[in-house]
Amino acid sequence: MAAALTAKIDVSTPSADYNRMADRWRTARDCSEGSNAIKAAGTRYLPPLAGHNPRVRNDPYWSYVARALFYNITARTVDSLVGMVFRRPPVIANPPGSDDLMADIDLMGRPLEDFSKALLREVMTMGRAAVLVDHTRPPSDLRPYFRLYPSEDILDVVEDVIGGAVVPILTDWADERFPLYALMPSRHQRAARVRAFVDFVVEVIAARRAG
Image (cartoon, rainbow, N blue to C red; front, side, top):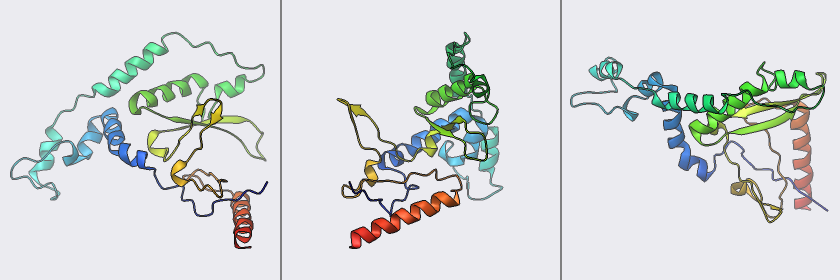
């Protein structure tokens, strides 16, 4: 069965749903981060008074912002809810010989319990999060690890299972004639061998389409 790779996919392009929610996510993130983030946003949250000119660096508006108070009830509420969930140590039934993985689940020194807390905190703050399960590459010892992606980094994900059938993902970029995709993290440097393989496949598909 012939399959082809869609060559002109820009994985850095946000979906329509992402663009619709981006402003709300920024507000949620700023509120969670607290007073400094709120004040840094300036007129987004604190409109200027008559006679203020926020475009001028030393305008009285910025003294007005500095005097403003923001009580960060958002982060306090999320921290309390996360604490309630983890008020008892979780019972983790991991396979024998995997204790080292549980103690450093993300290759950043974070144990599984702390990773789970961070995941729950992200979901409660933003409404969603993603966990990528990957594995290391040679010459390192092969082992799985987790990566937590915040809402702002999830540009387009559409997935579901209905009646035992998998619903297509990345529908904003779908191409019914050539439904094969190369998905690579946009924030990480791509390995040369991965880039070479993708370029090779694109060339092969382009030749088949032309022929």
